[in-house]
Amino acid sequence: MRLGALKLKLQLVCGDGFAMGPGKADLLEAIDREGSISAAGRALGMSYRRTWLLVDEMNRCFRERLVEASAGGGQNRGARLTGEGRAVLAAYRTLEAQAAVIADSDAYRALTRDLLDAPQPPRP
Picture 1 (cartoon, rainbow, N blue to C red):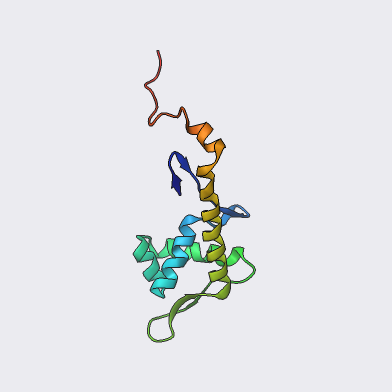
Picture 2: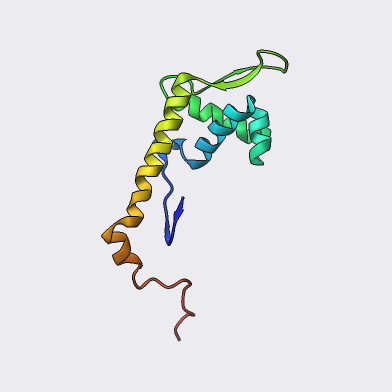
C-alpha cells in the first residue's frame, strides 16, 4: 500500500514464511470471486503452481483452513473461502485501513517535509 512517500506492507509472520500479506489477501478475494484457485491465479497473472503453494501456506499457518477446494470442474467443485478465511480477510483489510491513518500523523509529516522526489546525483 502506497501512501505518498510511505510504502506499507503488512505481513503476518508464520515460521519462516508469511501467513498473510497484501498478495495473499488479493488471492483470497480472487478465489472468492472466481470460485476456483486456478481461475483466481489466472485472474492475478500467477502460475497454477504458485497459486496453490500460497493457498497451502495460508491453510497451514492458521488453526482452521482459509480455503476449501474440491478437485475437478462441474457443479459443487472448485474452491471457496471458509468462514475463517472470510474472517481473516476482513480483519486484514481492516488492519490495512487502520495503518493508512499513519499518513495523517505528525511523525509522517516530519519525515517527509524535506524528502526529495528522487535522490540527488552522487557527490564527488
